[in-house]
Length: 82
View 1 (tube, helix red, strand yellow):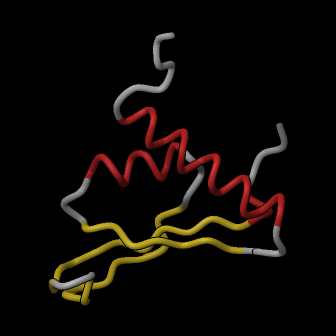
View 2 (cartoon, helix red, strand yellow; view 1 turned 120 degrees about the vertical axis):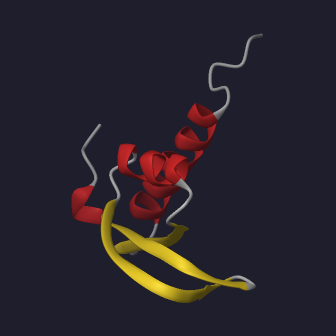
C-alpha cells in the first residue's frame, strides 16, 4: 500500500496528531516548541498545524548550540473541532 503521508506532509501529520492527542487525552492547556530561525520548513509546518509564532529569542541556547530561535505555541482553545 502506498504511503499517504510522504515527506514533510508526514511530519506535519505527526505533529498535528500529537497535538490533538495531548489536548484530547490530558489536561494540557498549552504546547510550545523552539525552532531555529534558519529552519523555515519547520516554521511553515508548525503554522500549518495551528501554532502561533510567539516570540524570538536572540542567541539563546538550543540543545548544544547558541542561536536565534522562535518560540511557537498553541492553546487547547486554538484547536479546531473535527
